[in-house]
Image (cartoon, rainbow, N blue to C red; front, top):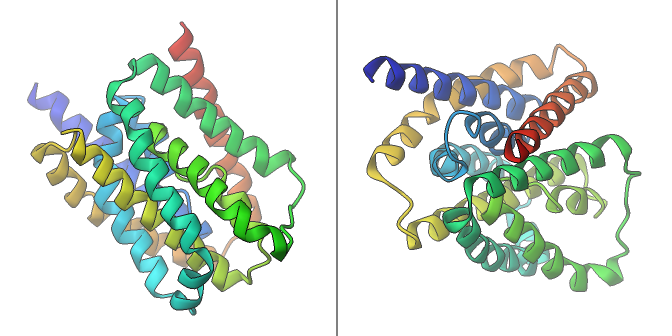
Length: 249
């Protein structure tokens, strides 16, 4: 039992270290990679509870170090409010659904994310449509986030379509992921799914996550981000397919 516990702790630490590297290089991917890998050795509900603290800390850091916090809040507050509502509602499925169903939903979310990354053309949202689209995108993103622990669909392609410059986009992603993490924690807490042991492991996971981000930031200056992201997406796609196949068979 102790050997199994030690092995799981090691896997958790390595997962958050690698996920931190991915986030350091690309500005995103920590919750997505963590959920995909950890759900292979534990329930998606437990995996989601473990990512709460490292996800919040790393995304909040990404948010507050950006150039225009108040401008983004003013522009995106409707979307953020909708994310909170959708995520808290979506956690009901994560808490109560059959594990095979949540594995399938998580795998589908990963595959859709990868398919968009490889196949979709860059989108552009006209300013006149933004006010109406933002809350709709927020609700859908929240529902997916609450049900799977993956914060990226459809928020990431939507934010990329708003025409933000690079630094503002990185900060906007940090804002969206921070709000999603807080809402996920509230939803899990309301359902009694945040257990003290998982909270402790989640807090300790900050260490490998930040070490990974430090390494990833250094790596970003030395490699092609596009090449790194391509192989990362391939890995996520394989992981998503594996989760779907496992849930079916």
